[in-house]
Image (cartoon, rainbow, N blue to C red; front, side, top):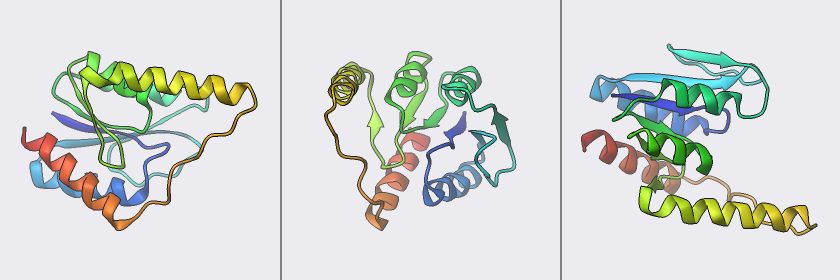
Length: 143
């Protein structure tokens, strides 16, 4: 088991929680990000800036039983298909039985935006988000 972080969009607080959890549970922590991001990590993989390049590297590194931290619902679906667990930096545990609904929602919102509509971005991160993320991560690591 290892923790793999799609670090392109993971908040620093969540990354720090992952570091502490990896030490506590004696598991490897791997971060993946494009060369545009500066990530402090013992095991960091730098990829190019092409679309989905970091996501594909995360998928290639993932094995059954791993925990992947990502905001990307498509990436979450791919790692769930490999038998890994997926968690958003906000603490949402992605489930195989609901991921298809999320992907449909993502497609509907993208279509709406392509048609000129506007959707809300994510809310500002709070300490409550950090706590929820930590609880969810530790739950997955203990399971």
